[in-house]
Image 1 (spheres, one colour):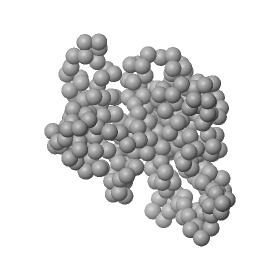
Image 2 (cartoon, helix red, strand yellow):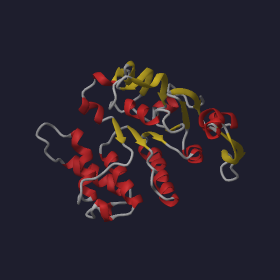
Image 3 (cartoon, one colour):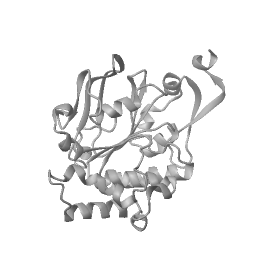
Length: 281
């Protein structure tokens, strides 16, 4: 892979490292992720892709310490993340789950302020640095003027920005997002992805997203991890990963790969007339 997590040019942008080392993740006794090795390039933005049910969200939960490996380890700064205090992990790794639900009537400012909980002591007193972190998160996401609006009264794109602002207020170096563009129309999808790229560039935040849109993953990320049936099958830059063979292997779908005239990157054009085995059953 061209983006090397151990390259000083990469690691200087972020203080913390995250790695899956032979990780196996299960629900009850059903194993979903099978012995996966995977380095999250520090200070970069990347995507986990794959067909429905391949283990993308499960892997993200393992990286976020929400799901304990049945074998192997998720290593945060070289330490097994499940052995670290919850509050300490929460100051380093933030997670935006799929379709989060805000308490009824809560304002955007109150929602974003919840990102400060990991930084507060047992007394939970509100400090100047908490106020500054919330104000910064609202400003960066363009929500300062909407701070007093209830979350359930704003647009879908603004709601998603509010959740991202909460994660920003948490001031983590690593941000994990599970399908951040789900249920948004194309304009809001691009707005959210543009915001994440800007945060990566200006805040040097390491970002890992689960994405369904392959062309968005190509255009907006430095690296892509492709899963099939809980196993890593492709990992590298978009140019290294994206091919007609990859689309067939990962999605059981035929497609043509052409060059995007705007970016020079690969562009996936699905062949609607042909499909592979799972559609022929």
